[in-house]
Every structure is written in C-alpha cells, then in structure tokens.
Length: 446
Ligand code: UDP
Image (cartoon, rainbow, N blue to C red; front, side, top):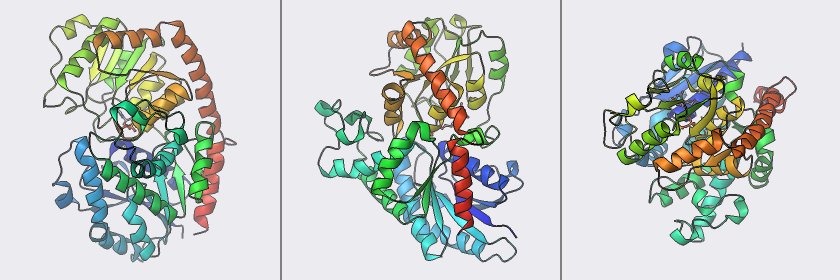
C-alpha cells in the first residue's frame, strides 16, 4: 500500500494554484492525495476525480468578514485561532480511516501556522509550502525586528530609506496590507516563522538561480530542510484550479496579433482600484496605441458592482484591445503575440512571466508584491516600476519605455536569459527536478 499526503492550501487563488501543483507532482510519484478546503473559496472537487476532498466548515468564521483585502488578515488570524475546533475533527477522522493508505505527512500553507501544532499533537509530520519566493521568508523574519525597533509603521520621510539587512528593499517595499495592520502583520509573521521551526521542512515555489542567496540566508536563521521545486506550474499541465471561469476567447484574439506586440494587463485575484484609477488605466492603455488584453475582474473596481468601461473607450480601442473578466493567464503569457505584462507582481504572476520571458511593468499594491517588484526591477532587472499616482500619461510612457525604447530591448534581452535559467531548472538534471527527487526521498523517510 502506498502513502497518502494531506494538503491544506490557504483558500486564495495565488495559494490554491501552487498547492494543487504540488499535489499533482506528488500524485505522479505514487502518493494518494487528500485536499482539505474551506467553504470560503472552496475548490471544485469534480475537476480532480483521483483526489479525496474534505470540506472544512468555516462558514461561521468567514461570514464575519467582508471579501475586501483589508479583511483578509483578520480572516486569516481568525482561521488560525479556530484551528483546533475547525480542523481537529476533520483531521482525526481522516487519520483514523483504516480503509485508506497510511498518512505520510501533511503539507500546509505558511500562513496556516496553528495547524502545525495541531498536527504535532496528532503525531503527523508536516511540511510547509511557501507559495511566495524564498526572499519573502527573510522579509517575514525581519519585519518583527523592524517593528520592535519602531521603524514600522514606516514614516513618510523614511519610505525611500534602504532596509540594510534586506538589500535592495526600501522601507516602502516591506510587506504591508492597507494602512494600519502592522500589529496584525507582526503577529502573523512571528507566529508563521515560529511554526516553521517546528516543521520538518519548507517547500518553496522558486528555483535556485533566482533565489539561492535568500535560501541560504533563511536557513542560517531557521535550519530546516528546504526544497526549491518551482516554478511549480511548469511541472504540471495548465492550472485547472481557477476559481473564476477563464475566458479562452483571448487566445483566439491573440492569434490575430503580431509577435511580441500585445501588452497583457492583470492585477491578480485580490487587488482593487478606485474608479479614477480605472479611468486613467483605460485611457493610458488606449492612448498608448499598443494592442492589449486587460483583465477587469468582477468586483475589482471599488464601489462598483458592475464594470462600465469609460465612454468612448470601446470605440477608441476597437480591434486593438480585448477586455475580459478573467483570462487563462499561463497560456496568454506563453503566446508569442504577448510582448509585455503590466502586473501587480503577485508571486505566481511574476514567476509565470519569468518562465515565458515576458518583461514586466510593475505596479505592486500590497503584501509581498512591493518586494517582488523590487527584485524584478533591481535584482533581475527584467522590468520597470510604475510608481506614484496612476495617471494616463505615466502609463503611456511606461508602455513606450518597455515596448518601444532601447531600454525595453535591453530588459527583454535579460528576460530571455532569465527564461533560459527557468527552463534549465526543470530539465531532468536541473536544480528543481533534483530537489523534487530529494523531497520524495525525504517524504518516504517519514
Ligand atoms: N490568474 C488567472 N487569470 C487571470 C489572472 C490571474 O488565471 O486573469 C492566475 C495567475 O495565473 C496566477 C494567479 O491567478 O496563477 C494569481 O496569483 P498571484 O500570486 O499572481 O496573485 P494574487 O491573485 O495572489 O494576488
């Protein structure tokens, strides 16, 4: 009889995708899979007939919070605080099911920190999945120290001050959510990092060539086993774990466009903008004259249930644009017609762009996005940042810099080299493939 792995993704798109990619890799190596998921953003289990799904009823907790990003931290902490009550019964019933394979271990998201202690009490070995970069772990370790020194919340005058221990980050690039959740973030990172110490190791959706320095730095502070096995999506077929329906008509539209001519614009599954920013974005795109695909997610314009494009926009961009509510992003980025990506720099989007060699216009908004953008522009130098207030002229200028100017050509050249590194790490003798073998061996020893 083989062994079973239990996986607990955090129920957000950017966390579900990589966890299900880990599940697919482990399943292909002979492990049986059980996925735990919440009512909040529950996963469509019919898409995965070979897996067992266990629904954790978090209705009471999740209904206390609004879907807004600002509430996500409160929801996260409430989930963790209710862990014992929420997960104990689900976990014990799976563990005691004698008809099923014995459990090898539990793989949980970094932010499910209290699950660590529950699993420890039940005698289940754990691995942590970090769905962001290795660098984020060092930012999470540094955050409480900077907070205790009084440097966080960051003062207006210190926003551009370098964070000495986290070069090349500036104070403004540190993780943040909204205006005033610093104490909550401090708690989240402190608990999160402590729980990693209690685990058997960390799986990271990254690869050595871009992150090995940060892995070494992290392991000096927390000496656990680390497995860099990304980019995960390159080891599996395109993600079927999308929570929204992906509009495939944009792939047909891309067929009608010239190579490297299209700008793809998407800000991920959580980011929102106000109506004024939305109008500036629309006219910045239209005035650039560059063909574009723009993902306008339902609910992503603050205060608007329905999204009405500005008057005259559709006529002005007819034939040159495709506006969709959700795209098959990995396939879009892989299309030869796509030449640049205006992104919020969620880690999945950043990695997906690197894998397809698509240079980025970076417009980070919260969480690790600012730090990711800083690495894109100042470490790998494969993108430019669009900073400050969103204005149509600035948008137009950024698009021109990246897609028309000499500066953009140099960035594209560096991006091609980085794409090559990503392709190498997934070859059978590449760093991530070797790490997967080590992970399987490690898991077999539990
Ligand atoms: N995504 C998608 N369609 C879209 C926009 C995004 O399928 O129109 C996917 C994208 O490929 C990525 C995930 O949603 O895998 C977003 O994750 P990321 O970490 O980039 O951002 P988040 O949504 O967590 O802010």
